[in-house]
Image (cartoon, rainbow, N blue to C red):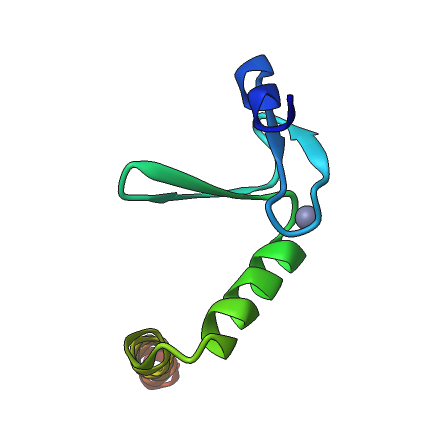
Length: 84
Ligand SMILES: [Zn+2]
């Protein structure tokens, strides 16, 4: 029972336990595993838990990725304003 539901094309959200059909929800493929959330809200909660665990690598990588994404957005914004 429990996790065996996965074989019936159903997933269980690891955060809230909700069962949902394949094709919905948020599935993160990490190496050979899947991390399964029924909604982006639960994915965000998982991310918050990950940060709260305080792994230095995870925290600094999160901040680095955020800054990278900001830089990409900034470049896009500059490119559009030049075109106009
Ligand atoms: Zn959930």
